Image (cartoon, rainbow, N blue to C red):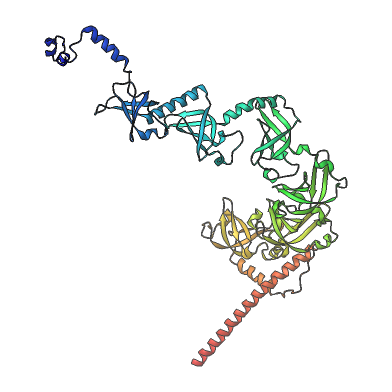
Length: 621
């Protein structure tokens, strides 16, 4: 029985087929076509540089094996799956095909690149379709926050976090926030998102409702969201309004922070509304009565008031009597002086001073004040006529120069004019600046006083006697004097005469004995042709000088100088011009007598010297 069981019948073996060694050549054409169709259905078409889905078919300590439907499986480093700690076989993930077959014949895949490409695709799709994205705030950066969207870091500017300014960004770190993509820059891999745009859409309906119901004079509640030097911006519940600094208080303030603070709630009134530009002007002080309405009736023109300086300008200062009630103190009302100065020389901001009300208009709410009125007007002083009597001498400060003279301040409020012709007896001064400068101190004599018209005429040259009274005798017509030519024109030449005065001579009268014409710098004898005292002018000539004229003139002067000088003190009187001329003459003759005495002394010494020499000669003989 056992032998029968072991016997098996085998089919006939086709040795022809076994001898054909070609691979796959044993199939018919129909079988080959059927097998190829079956094989193609098991393999997916895979292109390089694209993202495909793969199934995890194996996991090791270092690698994850994925089947993407290709002829071979791909291997991805397990480091790229750190964000999927629960990854298991059978899970489906997206990968990026880097290479279908490398040098070792392996399919090269990358999940990291797949995540980046997918993330950018999602970002672009969210931007195109205006989709809201959930973002995770990772950290704070300069000017805003860094958030994570689809695994890509995006920038959330501080101005796009909320409709109101955010002063502390740290409170958002680690939190989730809904955002929208507002800008994509592929060149720099930069994405900008906004959370504010979502809030604004929620507030749009509320804002439109507020704008539709907005009216001038309407009182609204708001919150201060921003503060600047010129005012504050107030959030009225989705729409902003500007509260200008001038509408915060009836009084003067330097900055809104003096009275207000950020995030402060307050009631404001609508002053104006521009529907096209959506601008709302608000007021706070308008909710209170104007301080001028409660100004005491006791304050009238002439009343004395006390207040604080709140502003100093070039033209004056503002004195605050009470918050919201100010008066202007013009610079001309600060001092009796006629010369306007900087108001800061008199007062500074926050100074407490007294003033007098000059004008008052309660309807226009204007008031002008003065502080010089607190002291007596110097022109109305009873002692003015005695203090500044004609002929009295004073010292003052030069305050202003003009073409015709200069103004001197003798005391605060008392100014006098010194005409240019009253500066010097001998010098021809074309402009006062040639003689004196502003702020110089100058001594003067009172020539005329008109208290009613506040006019005071002064002179400087009158401090000395008029030398022309003396010159009239020295430079008499026909007298000869040694003079120097200092300038020469087409018709006349200017001469420097003794005592520092000037004379003139016609060019035709400069001819010398040898026929040549004298030039500038030469010193010659000149004869006086004319002496014009009132015009302070002396006309001379050189051509008509005779040899005997000079000694005769010198002899005549010596005779005059030999006369005893009157040493009695000169009397200062403005009514007797003749006496003044005589006094000048005596003073000059006194000086000449000294010269004459010196001359006689020299001659006496010379005579004595000759006598001694004669005696010596006789002794030698």
